[in-house]
Structures are given as structure tokens and as C-alpha cells.
Image (tube, rainbow, N blue to C red; front, top):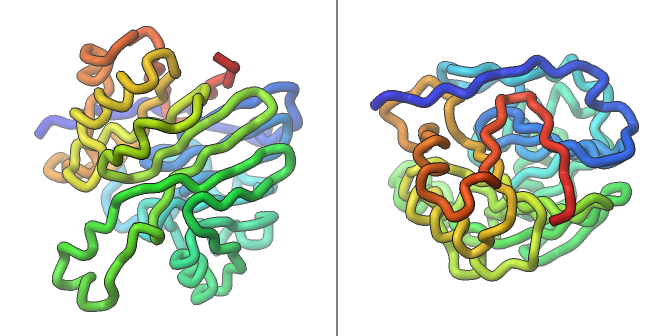
Length: 264
């Protein structure tokens, strides 16, 4: 399989400054950073210590982050729940929010975290964040992982982030769910374009794009891990753009390149 490779732009300390708008950065893989008028939220940051070969490096290291108001985590896979990243940022993070299960995993490594149920809402500065449903319990199909515990839907989530400048939706790693096609209006979707059967997949991406025909889409979860035989880390955004409704609202960004959020 030939991989599409993401470009990269180095981020510096200026991206953490107080600003008069909201900027969204893809951090590589399934991670993102939001700076909403100076409030900084990291979503599933994987900035060091991954156990697979990297194709495109993260746009900054943990040592480059002066402070994060919050880290929010969608699920327990180590390309989203990065223990080395969390431990490095422990003393520079205001709060950690995730599902109840992942909050327990955080406690095991000495990271205080708030655990939430699907549908719960909390605030970080002026950002109102709600957990949305996700379907990614692939572990139950694995003899190794299912022997440890039975994974439930409530262990996985997405996040809806309501900022002063618009609404961002991170659906998270998930097979397409009917509920995901009937979400309240948003102004940006961080769209997982992995074609794995435990991710939304290309048919699911096209359905979601059709369900929200005017919402800008920023593709993530592609072009960063050097694993041409793993569908989980692959996807070609140009293939998606050629098929979706209103392709002009599909913004292929480099890792570390800002997207300026605007209300639609």
C-alpha cells in the first residue's frame, strides 16, 4: 500500500499566546490543539514515545509547551492516550478530562483526571465541552485484550467544543453511528479519514460529509505513522476531496498549520 504523507510545520511558543480568535492545529495522528482566545486545549496529544515508526513528526515536543489549560482524551489506545506525553506535561496542565475508564488509567500513572459519561458537559475557560458517542471497542474482537476486560461504548467518546468563535467537533476514532449523523450544527469537523473497519472508513466519511454539507472538514488520522499495511494509519485526503459534497470546504492542512475557526 502506498501511503499519503502529511506535511509538517514547526510550531513555536507564539501559538500559546492570548489571541482575539480561535485557532485549530492538527498535531498529527488523531491529535489536535485548540487556542481559543488564549485558552489552550490539547486533544489526544501524542508528542513522544510512540511504539511505531513515525512518518511525519509532531509539530512540537512536550518541552515546547509552556502550559495547557486542559488535555482531553477520547479513548485508551496509545496513539491517543500517550502516557509519556501526559507525564511530561503533568505539571503544566490545568486539568485532564476523559471517560471514566480512561480516568482510571490516568490515576494508575499518577495523573489526576476527571472522568465523564457520554453526554456530560464541562467547561475549560470559555470553552464548553460535551462528550459525544463513539463506537471503537475493537478490543472485544481481540483474544488478548478481551481476556483482560469487556470494553463498553462508554469507554470511548468524541468531543464537541463550543468556543466564542464557533463549534468544533472531534468525533474521535469510531465506526459510523446513526447518532453521529444528527448532531447539532457545528463550524468544523476534525474528520478521521482512516479506512479501517473500526474507524469511520471512506463510506462513512462520505455519509458524514453529506449529513453536514456546508461544514468545513479538516482531515486527521492519516500520513503520520510509517505503516503502509495498517489501514488504521492510512487514508488519502485527496481521494476524499474528490468524492465529497462541496469539496471546497475540505481543508487539507499540514501538521502544525493553523486553521482559523469561523462561524458558518
